Each structure stands twice: as structure tokens, then as C-alpha cells.
Image (cartoon, rainbow, N blue to C red; front, top):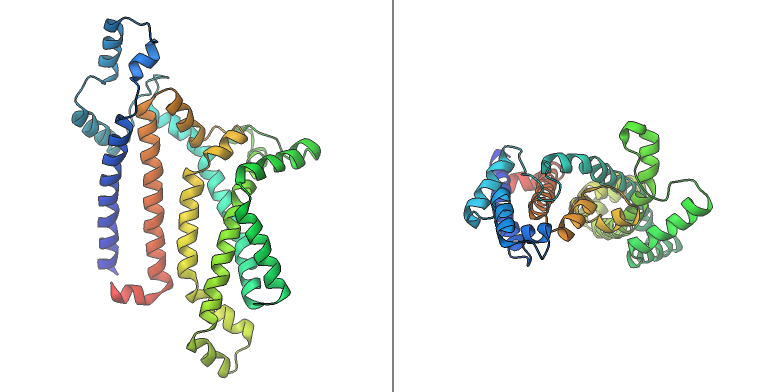
Length: 315
């Protein structure tokens, strides 16, 4: 197990190094000079040069890369070109919106998908299975931003159960904050729940056709006992993979939903930074999102070893 853990940690470190180099290289070749953008197209060259020196943009790119990486290792993400405030503080403020939203959506997705997948697998080929698969097909096909607008129209404008947008902050109380995140979380969760339910059903059906399932039934276990005691645990490997990928998508891919609901999260921050050519914010937020994706995948790999002892033995 220790060798397996060490190997996954080494892979995590290498992935982070490669990701930081790729992110810096890609963002640095984006057209447009941040200093020129901030000063205006008619600004005198000496003023633009002075601002470039102040922001550190006149330094060699390799030096800027190592300065940026070294700062991140110390928890210093640099200073925003536009707002002249520490990027770490800007990220921390937005993270308290994006992270709870992602966890809320993931919890809803899992709570919906697990019973739906189990129900469909236990009634394979029957009306219940066909109904669940039809609903999941519809959930996969509907764009989440369109579904978000429908939710606003019904539950915010007509029924007035939830706010249509904005975020009051956690200092206003847990319930008002959760109410503001409920519609965005549902808009994010339902398409992901449809995918997860289909994967759960497919994995369970595959497990139910294995020899050890027939042996368990021959020993006298009922269909439900066989499903819960033997098939479910062995079917969790692909399900855990999808859950890990979904969390990565929810934390990094909620930019459209945050725009629809005017949520001050990481998605809106990076969207605004791109428009303002605030490269240090774009680089730091992107690197943070990549870091979260890699760490989640690392956690999923560890979960594999806990669910399936054969992985530990092979490692």
C-alpha cells in the first residue's frame, strides 16, 4: 500500500509541474499587453514601460515563471494587475462560493443517481428501468444553462421560493446562503446525476452477470441481498471515477451557471480577469483549479485501493 501511495504522490507532483508550465506558457502567448490595456491605446510609451516595470512584465519569462511558482508554494499568488490587491485574497473570497456550490451539487447528484441506478439495474428491461433511462437521457441532453433559466422562471419569478441570483454571503446566515445556492446546485446536479445513474446501472448489470453473483444466489441469498452485499461494492470502481470527474467539472466548470445566477465565484473571477487581461489572476485561478482536479483524482485512486483490495496487491 505504501508503494502504491508513493507512486500516486510522485505522479501528482509531476502532473502539477507539467500543468504549471503549460498554463504559464499558454497564457503568456495570449495577444494583448496588460499594461497597454490598462493604460489605454493612446497612452505614451514611457508610461506603459513604467507600468510594465511596476508589474514585473519587463522581466524574462523564465524568471517570471519561477517567481510565480515559488510564490504559490509560499501561498503568495501575486498581485492583481487590475485591482492591485493580492490574488490569494480574491481567490479566498470567491472560493467560499464555488466550493460549497460544487459540494452541494455533487451531494444532490449522488443522492439522485444512486437510488435511480440501483432501481433501474434491479428492474432491467422492465417499465421502471425504461422510465429511469428515458429520464436520464433527457437529463444528459438538456443544457444546464437552459435548465438554470427554467428554474429561475419557475421557482424564483413565479413561485418566489428562491432568489433569482446573487449571493448574500455566509455572514447573512447559513439558510439564506444555501437558498441562494440551491437553484444553481440543482442546475449543475441534474445533468451530472443522469450520467452517474447510467454508469451505476451499467456497472451493476455487468456485475450481476458474474459467476460469483450466481454462486451467491445458489447459496440462498435473495436478489436484493446479492445486489447490496456483492454487486454494489464491485461496481463502485467506475462510479468513483465518474464522481471524481464530476467534482472536478463542478469546481472548474461552473462559470456559465455563475454567470446566469450572478454568483461571485471563481468562474466569474476568471471570466472577468480574461476580459481585463489580468494574466496573473487567470494563471493563479487556473492553476488552483488544475490542482483541485489532480488532488481529487489522487483521492479517487486511494478510494480504488480501499474499495478493491486487488489494486493494493498489484501495487
